[in-house]
View 1 (cartoon, rainbow, N blue to C red):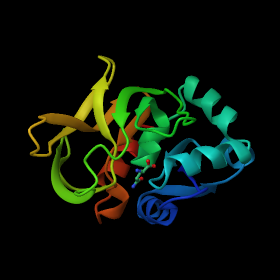
View 2 (view 1 turned 90 degrees about the vertical axis):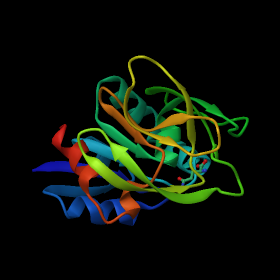
View 3 (view 1 turned 180 degrees about the horizontal axis):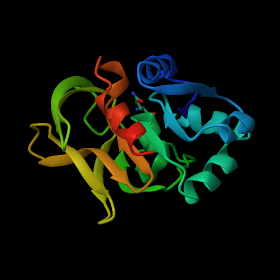
Length: 194
Ligand code: GLN
């Protein structure tokens, strides 16, 4: 059975744990480099990207995770987790860093402040329709050819379609929160890729 870690520094850790436990996996809450070493893949939850980034440094996890990402370690980031994996963060804090493991530029809170949280059905390639829960979600505004776009959303604000679920080799990202919808299919997709 695969051992899936959930980075457990801040954010909606419990929801990911519950989702993964419903699949055929062993779930490990990751707070230390030793725990990181013990898993086959890692989920980065939603939450507050600047807080999680800060805690990755203080936990001594920033460098080990960066090295593993470069070596092809599978990671799935949702919302703040996607921000942490991206190559460019627009409207981030001046000192905000990210791993650059997923070649996307995104804008924090890029779906607007007034309508900062919403739900929308999302059509995912090879999966079908899932419920997309967006909470102060980042908007992917540019991406490289190497990024597979697995789902897009037209938010109806005249800006056209933007990717909301993407994959680049070992790195997966969703701008919404599949862990908050009672539907494990996207987690299953990630686990099946291992
Ligand atoms: N806007 C948050 C951030 O910048 C992400 C929100 C979320 O994960 N729900 O970290």
